[in-house]
Image (cartoon, rainbow over all chains, first blue to last red; front, side, top):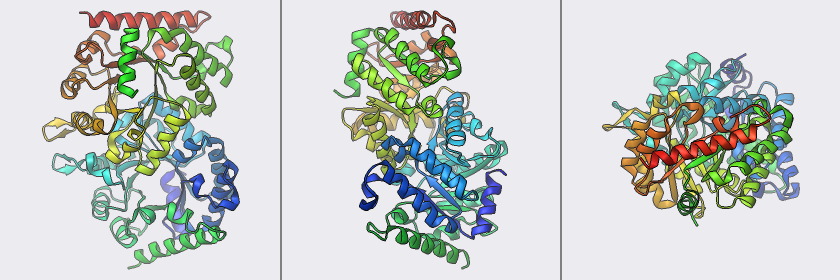
Length: 272
Length: 272
């Protein structure tokens, strides 16, 4: 099964478009777990087990592991997801983008080392920077399109022949790169109007949507703008609002409750 | 000293604009060194010691270490460069690009964990994706502008208000981002005409120039197009043509000879 098939299966199985992002900040791990790498590993593994039935996907953010020197921890967390929750789609958020021979190394990292189903990539270097990922036919990529951060418009919104650059990226990925292998796009929830423009341009291509929760994106507006023709089509990520729902001893119950509430809010928005 | 001052000092001390890229492919390390991670480490350390007096900078490409699960090896190679060759500028080639809080984690990785003077970054996410790096005032970034690969024109050459996107990136970095901290630009040697356009747009901003050697860029055309008003201004990278100059027992002599020859070719081009 390729990425698109795995996503469709996960959406149907769980009726959830929620993705839990694993961005472990050692300073925010509940104190009783400790403050070392073992605590980070326990924290992530417990979050995964407590939310796996509520989500379509998990998305570890590799920068947090790189900063801690904790690649071995990330390997074990990914292996845990693969072993215990094999139907959850595993998206490595690494935003890779480099020339072909280097991209081939990053593909080995994402797919062989961490066992990811998909990796986020940056489009700026063009087609040959993405091809080595798509050569792994049972995996896929989510290409950055319109990101959720304040400065995303600096270049992404520049006018290119009458439309913003991000729409140009969206069309190229949908028409060309998706012919080479399973692609999706990253479009932030913080700009629902633009999310709607991307959806209109790319048919049912899957969208990875960060920006709800701590970043403030509106769930109802996001679902209204971004759902595909089947009422799914999105992987809506929340990280900090779930991981750190409570700083105290009830952290795991609070995380699960936040995940359930977010899944339900997404579901309700889809039925409106 | 910031990145710009360190670069200027290195150019004056060595009269060299050559940078040796450390892209260790375990399959191409000379067989008598072995084929494990210890061999990769020995290989890189020996290359560094054999070429340090010939170069202004070293540029480890982190993808090769990530693919091997060899972050600890990269840590030790970087520490070796810092300890034994403290005047060489250390550029971590990682092409990071993410939202602010995540970029802050990548800055910790590049500057605290690996001790780099500079890291390569992707501009697509805009100003707030670069600010956390520039908050480290004694370090800097090289921002991808016009890359050396075949597909670099797919988006970088799109027309934005009468000029290509990469020139728009160049001007913004020179005018705005460089006010926040020491910036340079990545411009491939494979397009010397466009290198000249970038140089004309950005004054004496340092340029990191990959694409000579294995990628085929012409040294004389590169230097003619890209030198700054002082006859320096470039960090011209060669990786594979130096690392794998010989596959045999004379690998280290061959690597040094290739580095000396490339430095001399760059010098001669600058005196024309």
